[in-house]
Image (cartoon, rainbow, N blue to C red):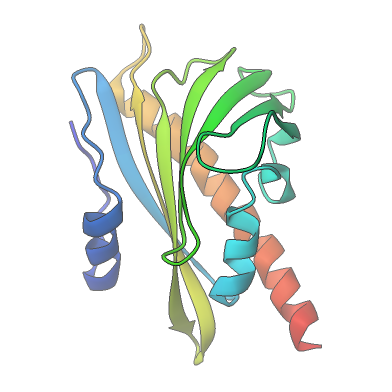
Length: 180
């Protein structure tokens, strides 16, 4: 089942263009949108850092990239206590600096997010007459044994919402510093 929250014009266009997941049986997918009061270049400077997700993702305590930074690179992420995981192994699937697209696939770790992949896109918008950013993050993941599709989707959406809120907080602080 493919559940996308209902979004208007621009969001729907970007989701249709960049966030097409093909969920198989026993998988769920969704897309979330966050508007950030900071210019695209600042937000993208954080999002594109596959090697430093902890700069804005509050559940990550440490990240080590195993080889040269580029498509196919693998990172080992340590997760802070409180979540049902301690490590995650993730591969960089897509990095497009021109269109601001980052794609990641989880390839290992001690968690229940099997066959998880996500796409994050960053788009310029205006918020209150100032340059801002619309961030869209979508995912597809297996529904674990013993969980429903809705439970799985809700759990992943909660994690992404937390990451996007933190991304907004960090980006907006950087934007204020840039202006002063």
